[in-house]
Every structure is written in structure tokens, then in C-alpha cells.
Image 1 (cartoon, helix red, strand yellow):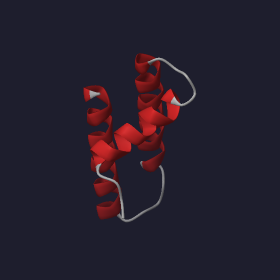
Image 2 (tube, helix red, strand yellow):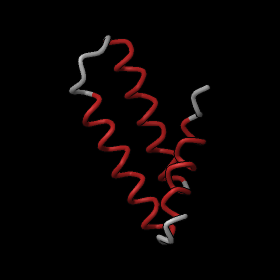
Image 3 (tube, one colour):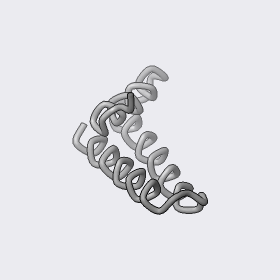
Image 4 (cartoon, one colour):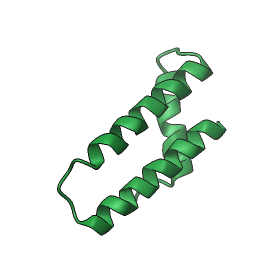
Amino acid sequence: MKLTPKEKAKELVDRFLQRRYTDEDSKECALICVDEVLKNSLQLPVLLSTAVSEEIYWEEVKQEIEKL
């Protein structure tokens, strides 16, 4: 089962926190990761509906990271 955007955001930030980054550094690193996923997902040859739903998902993850 796919994590909700909020759960994925927390998971990404928590992974950086485990590396002893500060809260702000962890959020910044997680945002960089999401930006890379978004940038690269637009270059992959996938069905348009899949690409759009993935982009929406990762944009929501990004918003949730910013709320943390």
C-alpha cells in the first residue's frame, strides 16, 4: 500500500533526522529529494495519467514536508 503524502513526507524527513541533521536541514534535504523525483518523473516515458497522478502525489508530499 502506498503511503499518504503526509506519511511519505514524515518518512523522508525522519530518514535524515536519523543521520543527525537538524530539523531544518532534514526538511531541506527531503525537499531536494522530492524536487529530484519531480524533475526526473517528467522525463520518464510513462502513461500520461500515471505521470500526472505521480506528480500530484509528490507535490502533496512536498507540501506536507513544508508543514513539518
